[in-house]
Image 1 (tube, rainbow, N blue to C red):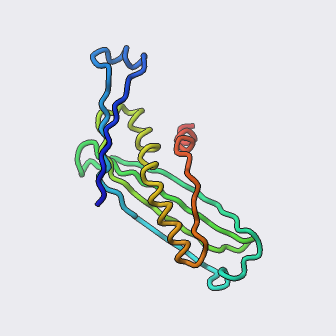
Image 2: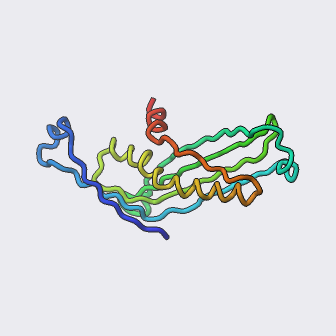
Length: 165
């Protein structure tokens, strides 16, 4: 298992100071308890022709999603965050390959109000998970005979804001 801890200290803005006049700081606790590959799927429907008959530059359709849930049966303030990435790669109208990966992390997050907790779970946690899933997908496509699929960094803030609309 993989363990890492990181403690974050955050100053309250003026509006929050008025609400919580007892405290000038909130001590957030952020702990990565574990991370793991939950699912990996690779399809090469045109093999072996897909490895030699590429007529044009491939196009990529990449979808990403983040989900989170509290794991009450694991203890207090423990959450699971799931990052999933799906990619369909085509040359003209022919599918070269499909790859899907789901990578999860178990996090302990304490002393965060609901708004901050939501942002940590859907923005900060996937930032820690993304490099691992990106590497797994790149290795998978390389082992399948294609160039490694190097997914550009994802905008988790933009994904969060779109979700809230």
